[in-house]
Amino acid sequence: MITAEDITRRSAIAEYQVVGRPPETDLESLVHLAATMCDVPTAVINIIDDRFQHQIAAVGLEPASCSREDSMCAVVFQQQVRTIVSDAREDPRFAANPFVTGELASVRFYASSPLVTPDGVPIGTLCIFDDRVRELTPEQGKALDLLARQVVDVLELLRLTYELGQSNEQLAQFAGQVSHDLRNPLMAVSGFLELATDSPEMANAPHAAKALARAESAADRMAAMITDLLDFARIGGARPRRVPIDLEPLVSSVVEDLDATITSTGATVDVDTPFQVHGDETLLGALLQNLIANAVKFSAAAGVVPHVLVQAERVSAGVLVAVEDNGPGVAPELRERVFDLMERAAGSEVAGLGIGLSTCRRIVEAHGGRIEIDESGLGGASVWFLLPDARSAA
Image (cartoon, rainbow, N blue to C red; front, side):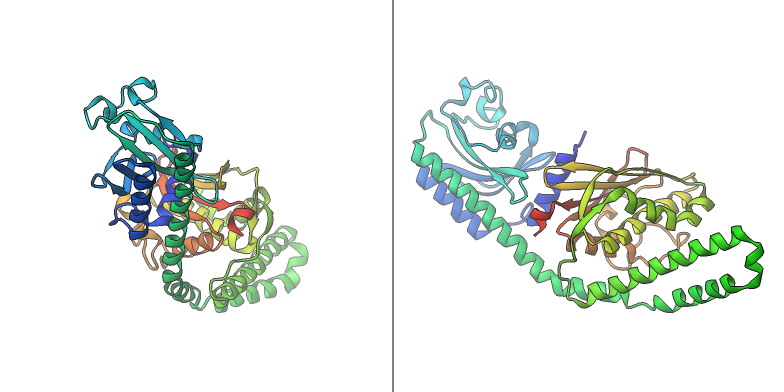
């Protein structure tokens, strides 16, 4: 069963864009340096997700992948301390490992230093090993730790380079999303609401007047949301303002705005978000509104009474928020594509232009976070996003 920490780690790894690609020259240089300084024939950089260990650079062997269950580094990397083993056959953690027994290799000496992201997420190791028993001097151990930190620095530079290369394209896409004529329909709705509110008949219809007041309030919030989204597009994708926000009342206001849709479909929306996050309230409100509205409408379109669960969990890198539903879900091969502009996960029976999830990704990434789709325990889709702590996203 995948855990929240596994999701956080997988998200952090994905940001570096190194798994499944040819080794980067700078990373290869670091493993060569590690092997030379520690006087061993083999050194590798291992990236470890919830299922596999990926060797993204190596000296002394060809980089490859193996299952996490077979990995020696997977046993120790989450402890976030250096590990040194003179003879792995005599260490109960490794004695039965296929890399020690001869099934995959015959490792004797093993040492590793963890790779920990600036957010405190362990993602793998810088590992050295030998097929003979030996020791590592204190100076060599310190050098291994130093080189592991250099590996993370290189990974961070790769991530920033990739993000900068994509920023102009992403900004153009986002501007295209919000360039649709959003204001005119909303102004028309507000005008009709104002006329209805001022009608003399409303004096004798308190319930209708109350409903109109709620509708006007929702229209005002929507107008403010559109203004802020347009401002966000104009400032060139700069980081949004970040203030403390209590998730519970924010989600409640979003659910209230979606009351008509929820009522018409008979949907149930359960909320368990007793946490505070740092971010832009308008943008995060737009994000949650998109995700909850999608969960309701796609579940209803699948012919079931929608059940939506909005829950949050604190993890090492911040707060993980998930919106789960009992709808049709999203096929694994479509889970990345649906975040592209004008892409949709369902047929024409569900209304929409296909810009919602693309906007959601833009908002989450502007907060320094990540958004993905997995299976839900309710049977449908689980769209989750990670919002890093204020210090991590600064």
